[in-house]
Image 1 (cartoon, rainbow over the protein chains, first blue to last red):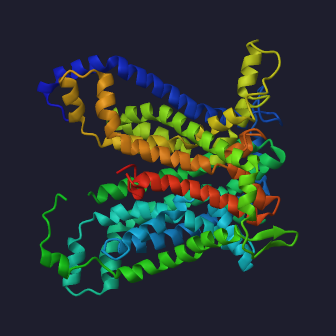
Image 2 (tube, each protein chain N blue to C red):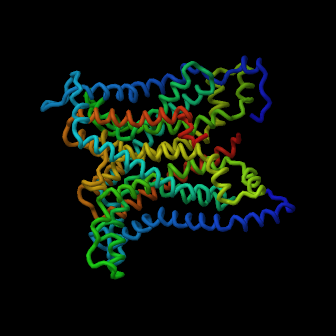
Image 3 (cartoon, rainbow over the protein chains, first blue to last red):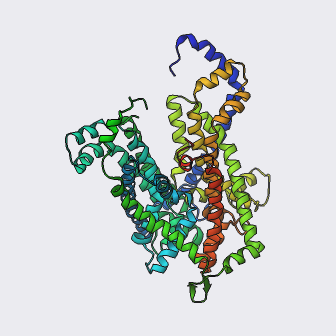
Length: 279
Length: 298
């Protein structure tokens, strides 16, 4: 960006020399984004299609599938379930991750082993992450439900991501205020609540929002632990497999919008956090 | 690192807030009880035996013998490995150029491209796998377009419910996990290196092969591991798009728990899958630190 005026002629030359290569990859990029977006555009178009059969030909414009989705009681309760379990798992995972990220600012014995333990839920295939809990809680006699088995599965899944987003942001912040407070004799809890937490709060909020959206989208661990409860992705899947219901495209569009809003919020908070707390 | 290094007395007198032992305890207890213990328990169950009355404690290799004596399960495992490799290779091929373009873009264009790349992946992968049904199906977009153009009279049935459609779905669902780490490692390359190579007369292709590619290798490695890992345990995509032909090991494992209630056998299959994944990590982990895989190749 900061190119001085003297270096701009060779810059121009270089662009001309790179042209065929650049051109080819830009074209490739265009195809890539068409590949990425055309299915989503298609599903949006189909969500307004006045036909009981999901697909073509288009038979006219209707918003009745959206009305059907918004009036569908099981769907609304699945939405409520997803929100509750998302909030709960975001709160638990962010708290645990924050504490561990604070611990990781110290040197301690076995740090690498602890790190591998934290990363285990990402390394372990998702389907296994669900199955181990199905077996474990099955033999413990815990009935599968939203706030027992599903919540545990979601916290497991979200925890490593929360740790990986929090840790670098806690590691790099300027510690002089914290040190000053300690030198002046502040208690540990004072240092944390009055100095450290206010500094890292934007990162914590961003992490919690990301954690929420990860939990909201979670399917594979949920399907094995959900019992007869329903979350949004599980309900959507059941509707595909059991009846290929005509309101699926409308539901897909609503799910996409909901998760996009949640994720954009997290993204915005993360940018703000990184800006107010530069490395 | 840009700060002046603190003196020894500084670091000795003022530790970061809190004691590591106390701070770690809640998270570690959670992981031990709800993650490590259940995994170990599943390994134990894989040596139990399943019957009409459920799965009972035992010590038998019956389940493992059943896996390796039947060509069905070994075949499915190999097929899953093959699909995983194919999906990884395809994603790499598709994602590298886009990662390159984004890394070369400037200012707002770059922010916009990153956002465009992220947006579709924020929607649940169940939704992103589902969207291919009304594209590839009998009355899907492709068939209806081809029929209205008069290219075909009857809808094509081979577009959906086979390995090809699973592969397409997997690449579509998981490409971000390839593009992102590659982008992050390309982003770290000092543009001066490219300028230097160009000024010394290297043609763009040579710059790519000798400068960009080797320096972006950490990103390529983490992207490949992530995509391979995710495809190896795929369940939703083959279930929705695969039909009987496109089924993968994840679907066979799931059916042991969701329909045939053979927990011992399902556990044994799961252990095999975990072992395959762990071997992969051990092989790669000798060269790359595991945490770098998830933070974009360091």
